[in-house]
Image (cartoon, rainbow, N blue to C red; front, side):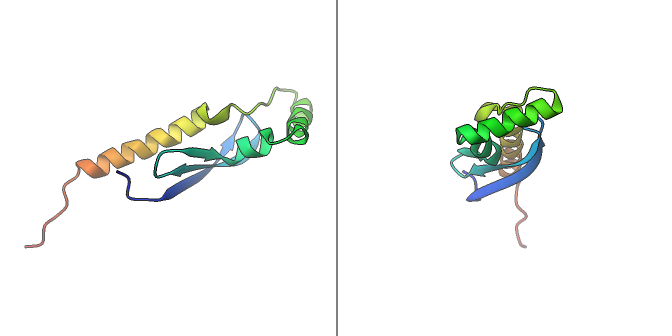
Length: 92
């Protein structure tokens, strides 16, 4: 079991050409501010299309299964596994 309530990191997301914050809760549920920002309304989606045209490449949020979210969750899981596998020193 994790010993934290929530953790987050901010990364540059190439899929939306913007910085996003990935939030992971202790039950391993995930939230991404980029997903919230770019899929929340038609206006948000229009802004992403407009940005795509300016950059001359397709921008589209990949959802919560994107590689950035997956990579961060795997990093946290590896850290948790590493911590639980370590012995703690005993006072003598």
